[in-house]
Image (cartoon, rainbow, N blue to C red; front, side, top):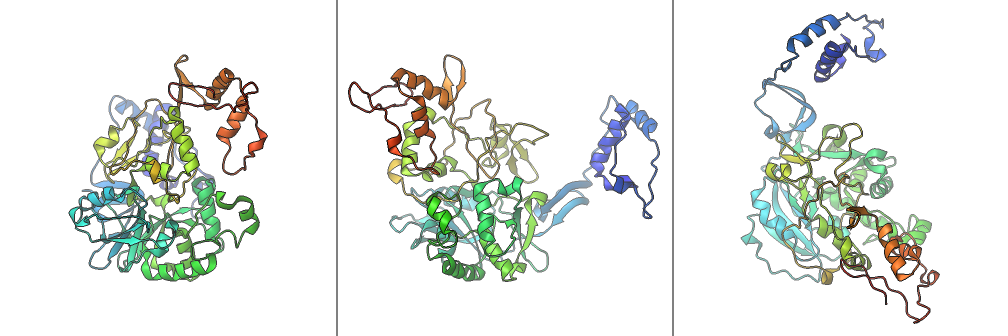
Length: 511
């Protein structure tokens, strides 16, 4: 029967539509052929379905059973299963076995001991880590007794290389390790999966297609760099999803440094000199080795059989780490010039945090005010389902870099617990993954609504009698361009002084 090719839940919906509206579903020509290749003639079921619709029009026509469950092609471990006897669509794997695999957690840290938030919550989580290594700057001081916070042994390692080299610099003694940074905490359940029998780690990857990766400059660059190792490589692995084999990591990093320099100084300069000369540090891409590079290296060496790769766009994946310091990460990643400009525009600091994945409990998820939905089976919080052309809840942005590389500690205050911004009603937009921050809102009190930065500057430029385009040029010039300080003259002819536009919540003045 051709309907065997249709998912059963979708077929039940078709039957109801056919009975109530008289609309017969159109089937693909290929499934309308029998084994001999002849066309199949289907019986007309409209009268029967119409009779069913009349009988059940005032009641729920469906009955539910706990004896069968449809997991719709989802990777699972036994912990995820319910009381059902028949399972449809699931791929069942084995959970982590501590007697077979020891795993170290490597944490990239920068300043203000933000990793303490992760360490203090570690013992309350279901995780596989038997050791922790915290990578800190060589100039950092650390006097914490981590035994007060966790039963897991914690080691401090002072960097002798840039932070983006932590993947290669971490001195790991166990056979396997994972890496995260201090802006995250360990998820309530770190559901590492292994194949039954051989116990091979199951690693999710994202296909290197335009919708999932290539439209984001950072992800696109990761793919380009990985293809230096394996031509045509198209599997993107997030650094924090990979379970690294310590021995293979060592061999990979040794060759990576030979190719690209001890600290990655040749990553772009040696292989793309013209591009590097033109753009330099403004290239949007990783500065060090990535999990995708590591996988491409293993594929080239024909050693990738130590992993079972699974497409997360088809079978899903569960994040082992949850980002809680989103605002801090954004500020830490800014240059001193960008940070000063950001902090100086106090009127523009009204940022709403609108990602759902940071909510770790059902109460926080459903009470977020963002429309987040709690998935009871997997104990995770997700944005509402996007149907047709629905509006995302967060603004879409490019994929960010993994870590900050400039120390700006003199500008920031010490924090441990994550910063949660006040929620705003009526904010539209979506941040994928990934993912991340909406642009600042400026409110027009007279109009009772929002105005753009352009309107804001034009109004106040008129008060100062200066050219708004010159101010906009300075405000919105990106680092991709070089600004010539001589191309604009905002000097007051009567006083000989330059005009200064100061923006705050109360004052606009000229000097």
